[in-house]
Length: 367
Image (cartoon, rainbow, N blue to C red; front, side, top):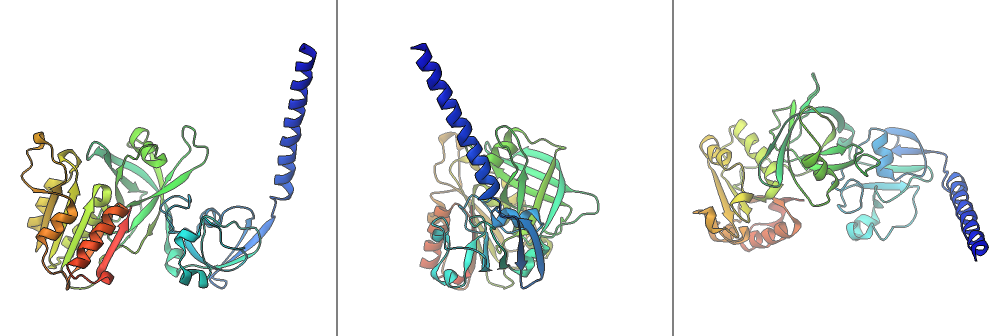
C-alpha cells in the first residue's frame, strides 16, 4: 500500500515537472515573437519592441500613452486605435465596443490585441503630447465617508495643462498581492490655470485596486506617477446656457469646469444639479454655494434621493432626473455636461431630450 502511494506521488511529480518544462519551452518558442516594428501615423513614430505584449502596454512602455479608464482590462472601450496592418480577426472581447462603422475602418481595442508581428497603426496626433509626470502627494483629506480628495504636486519646473473636464491616469505601484503596476483614470478637479498641481476626488470601490491603495496605503509625501491629460469632455466654446449634472466623484470634472469659467470671467448661465442619496454623501457644499457669489449667473442645486430624518434636509428631494425635469424649462437652446454612472447619465439624457435639448448638445463622462 505504502509502495503504491510512493509510486503514485513520484509519477504525479514527474508529470508536473514535465508540464512545467513544456510551458517553459512553449513560452520560449511559440510565445517568442522576437523584435517587431510598430509604425505610428505613417512613420511619424517608429518603434522596435519585443513581441507578444498587448498593444496598449507596448505603446505605454515606449512613452506613447493611449486613453484607458479601466487600465487595460477591456471594460471601458476607450483605448481605440486604427490598425492598418499586422493583426488578426476581431476578438469577442472587442466587439461590444466597436461599431460596424468602426469595424469598416479597422478600429481595434489596443488592450486586447497583441503585437506578434510588424504592425502599423494610426492614433490622434494630440496623443503625442500626452506625457508622464512624477508627482508628490501634497494633501489627502476626506470629503465623505467614501471619497478622498488627493492633491498631487508636480516636480519643480513641471507644468500640466489639461482642459477643464479632462482626466489623467494614476499609476498604482506593486502592493500586497499586486505583482505589477496598473493604472486607473480619474478626472482632474483643479482648474487648468493651477498647472503645478493635480487635484483628484477618488471614491472607494469595494475590491478596487487603485481605490483601495489610495484609501488605505497612500499617504502625504508619497511619490505618484501620472500620465495625461486625456479626454474630450470639456466645455464647448458657445454662449448657450449650461446644465451640469453629476453625482459622487462626478463632482471632480464639473468643479474644474466651474472654476475655469470663474477664472475666465464667464457670464454664461450655468445650473449645476448634484445628486446624492443622503446628507453624508454630499460634499463641497460651502465651496459650491460660495461659487454662486463669485461666478455670475451660476446656480447650485443639490438634491437627496433618500434623505434621513437626522439629515434635517430642506433642499430638493428626489432622483436627480426628477429634480432636473421639475426645475428646468425648455432646454432647446441649452447644452449639458453630465458626469456619473452610466445608468444615471442615460436617464439624464432621456430627461434632457424630453426637454427638447438636441442630443448633439449633450456631453458626458461615464464613470
